[in-house]
Length: 480
Image (cartoon, rainbow, N blue to C red; front, side, top):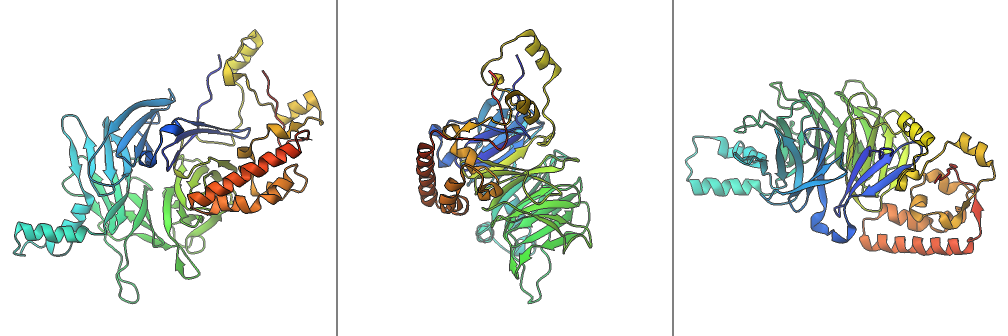
């Protein structure tokens, strides 16, 4: 029996669905690993990361639970309660076999059976600021605690990331919480605490609201903020302020950056809350004020970006428009668009992610076919190349309109909707408004109305063209 094809992309949703996808040049396959009937808002997935290696994926929920997904078995191996602090999980990792979690209130905990370790970057920031860091202030413990609680107001942890170079290093950032890097071998104090930049030209303090962080190399960390700041820090340097700083502004307005992903030690991909996506370079005189190129296609807020690392040239992006898009680093338009029905919160690609690689049958599969071995279930479905298919059935091969699925039409490139020769052109023309609402609005009520309208119009179109056939854009054959 042929081995089941592995997934090369994993995506999570706001309602708690964990999805596995196989994206390649022939087709895009998707599978849900959670039952939709058992989901609620509390089961929403807030963070995702690999474990100690790529054989397991850690899925963090809003309800402060961690699901461990076995990549080889393609199922959950365990579910762990990690209650502590308040708010949803903003980061999850594994260190020396134990889980590491961080909550929005700032509590970071290493879940060891014999020796649990916990610390709070927000508390560390508060205790090292203002009057609290001065030892000559004559305060009672009650006054000190009350002042510390007042300083904590408005501070939230937004993201925790583990270093892929040194597994014991973790970086943190959030609202009124500048970058901190901690070593789990010594959790008394952070090994690096960033210092805010100097005041602006009006001598006003520059606000701090880090939305995402990423390690560029063993000694450098990059951050993006909701005030359009993209910064690079050297954690081994005595300089606590950023060694390089970029600003994403358009028409004199700061862009709200929501996600960042390292491409190499000098370049990062940054996404915004308005669907903007750009490649930035920290080197001097690179691009236009650091901006190398903008990527097109995203509509809703970008929630997560994932790159395979190393010399990989592809990265995946998800957001509130419910699309998973795959880009080439040097290309502006997405190579693949996949509509996944739910608001997406995270994405993770495999280290060998290459969607444009040739999909070839293995020698073992060829031997089984020659021996007459009958495959089970989906292994019987083989997608043939266009040239082979043309030789077998000729140019008159046609697909029934009734066999077409609405989900496949919604995931087509934008250029297809303008093709007047397409059999569904009239349907595309009549549903332009509904499709725009589905992509742009955040209202669940408006989305549901638009989706119901699309379904009704699609059924009407199928009924009117029940006997119609079309030539597909990509010719495919199902061999049983």
